[in-house]
Image 1: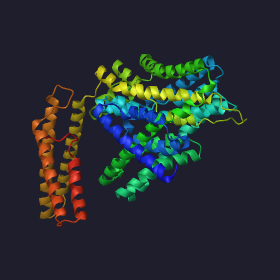
Image 2: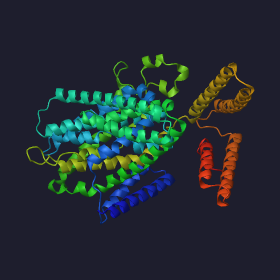
Image 3: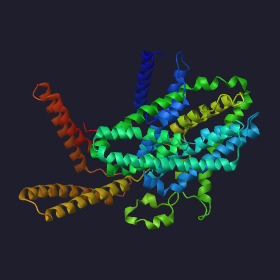
Image 4: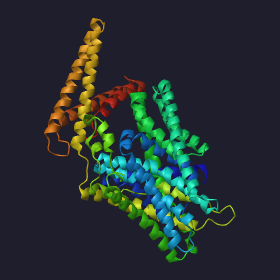
Length: 559
């Protein structure tokens, strides 16, 4: 491709992503499930296709996506559910890889255990993008969202380590379970250590530089790549390093970053997520010609058996594992919730109700079972399989393994992705919006009360009349805000519904504020167009209105 044709291809891809996102917003279907279908349709047309390069995906695409997801996750919530997250992201991934490997060795003609474990490791880690997009839209309970997030952040490191061990065994190297376990532990511990080191460096740099939003963005964008490259250079898990760095940085950001820096960084990462996720899901569909090209050498029965084993284990093992972990004795099972001993150390007044629940309900288990969509990491992982072994022979059944992985990704991403929302609605599973809104208003009230107390302390210090006047004005504004929050709390506490009650006074106030902001913006534009206000001055004043508008809830304007 020439530079011009490459640019045209990228622009066309962005246009497709925007259109599909528009369709998804209006139909309620997840864009992550629609984009691969569009990619397949394009792949069947005459014209150039982009071949998925696993090194580019693993080095340039995966680190920023994982880091952004980690920034949006809760370190405390994942820590409370750590045993469950480990159960899903380590134990379940290992079981999936081993069972698929055994199935290939026993039932697929000519297949080896190592080749089966390789494809099992590739399809084992769910990509939670589609499930989370749907889950947030339909209002999944926060604890389910946390489990999906935590699993999606940590399972890639497990899968890639198992894959590397399986490839080494397939090449004829000296394989031993002890060596494989030692390799996994070293990769995991080293990845965590690198992630913590990078997060510490990020914190040190953010103190003098992070107050400038542009510098904060530069540091934020460099962090995932720095963590991944440093970890890979010392042969530990780069994926785990990126995730750990993102979780720690996201946890520390409220203390270390300025308000302007947080707003700008958040906007930049949302744009990166939107474009990268869209491109990788389009890429998934475009790999169809490369995947089916080498299937002519296999009998149809062999292909059917291999696909049935791979898809069957992926779809059936997850719900069985979740049910099993719920059924084990209290002293043995990995509970889908927090440990009671840990919970007793927490202040019940400062702990959300969802954090104190110990087990999932049957409906929650069903929803979590159907959230295991696979994505680009599976295809990128399987494409890293070498074409030939060290002795010059072809890698065993590589084309068959590629096809099995593609089918699993397509079945889960499209099949589960499109049906996840209807299933959640049919289960009647949704977050208690009233409780969440009440907790937020309680936190707002507490923060305002802390501000009022700080004004009392400031007033007790030596100051002049000007300071007294300013303090009194600020106290009046805070008291007005506190009365509004308390009034909202009374409305929320008196409501018997799980949804947030609508206050006519509150809705009217929002409408009035939006009308006032729109009127100010229109007047500023008239001043600019008349030559009375420079464009630079307009941008400064418009930014002030933008920040004020951003404080309002994201609801459609009244007409």
